[in-house]
Length: 302
Length: 324
View (cartoon, rainbow over the protein chains, first blue to last red):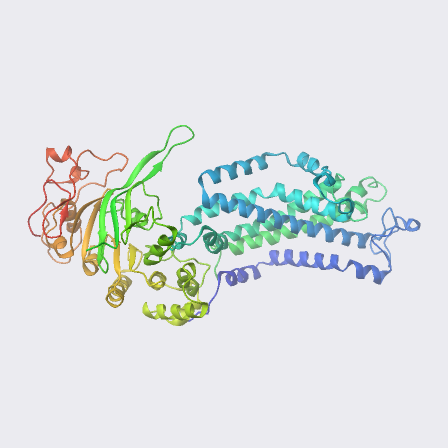
């Protein structure tokens, strides 16, 4: 009784704090993100550009100005990687978040209302899950956005490619979270504290928002984190296939695409973005695993 | 005398099995129960596991769909009452659950848990709710600073006090308590039981207590209803029930209570066998396979709940008459 109020979140934070691979993963991600945000300042400071082409200094080796050399159009490779990273990481974050939001809503409705609602939503989930991923991605990526009512300006801008990928990955990626949330909701709906709230006359909305979702959120957070790694890879694949981020904007995936023709002459141009994708995905997975064990009530409560 | 909360011929069945083509079978959990709770009264429902006590409690609160009969609150049928009356009933009828570890949301503070009924029913402002929470914590014997803590920081008995405070929050007329003691340590049970008795004396609540703890029932209840396989087999005042049980099943329950010292044997002795499956109930009186006094008639004719004498009713062809 003398113990100060310790919420479950504080307990989780204590567990996470002792998990060094998770902390290292988080540290790498934060460092990568900050470095990517710093790209414009780095460009100013070094007097290089990751966007402007300079055909007189193509394929420069690494030196004091171009720390990682320059690419086939004379752009500074490091700055281009950082600019690409901004896009790649933020697509990963946005699309994972979007998938989780959609999945949570669908899963919570299916699990709480059950019956026909559950049937319809879960069969739809099975349908989406059964779609062959890559061909659908390519078809969706080929949709002419102007026919969907978007303005020409938007479609031609770099933003369109960015949001297109976020939307596609969200539309195809929510199924895991939907199933997780449905299972958690089904279990929670039988718990007595949910019955207690229903006996009080709480609305479905209140029961879901106050009692079910806060108790179901842990696996969602973990799944979102792990999903982010998957999105990075999907983005790379899409951009690699040329349906993702288009020049002059870039991402790690589209840098890989550009590098494939030059793999014999300038292999480093493929290795750098590939390595960054690899490092980010590993860091994200370490962090996600750490969250998973920190959220598991069976792990040491100290 | 008008009943506050009443079950009229109430039945609840649950579907089992069933698939795309074959329809699900219905398992009757509560079968034609008639039971009335008067204002300020403490009514206990006793019976073995599987006798339908918990389902009856949940059906009274509208937590499980009713398959037959009615639940009447303050003279109104809950199935047809307007939404506003239903919300009013949900304020007046509160529930305390068996497991104090499961009935409190681990994500909310104790203050949030106790204030929830007030929020749902839009009672008071944030400040008056806080004051009410402190008052309720005092009423159930917890310190006021408990409001800022989380359920996992409390023991089972303390949590049951929190659950009770939540039930008391909207100033209800009825508390339905589903085995409120059975998940607690014996030493804590008496504390909670005394608290229930004391609260009733102070606030004038009506209790519907589901229990298989006959000693607790004896201590708290005015009347006792015995349930067997989803039906009420005997209703009597608590003293008559404990001294002169009329139904052989009640007698068997009483005989099964372990006593210190050499207790007298109850006629009929302890109960052999188990409660039968509700999917395949025996014909006639569902209790007859376990009943020492069963006759041929018991295997054919279903006994109805009929008045026996002063305030007693029993569903038995051959009610016991002797005193214990």
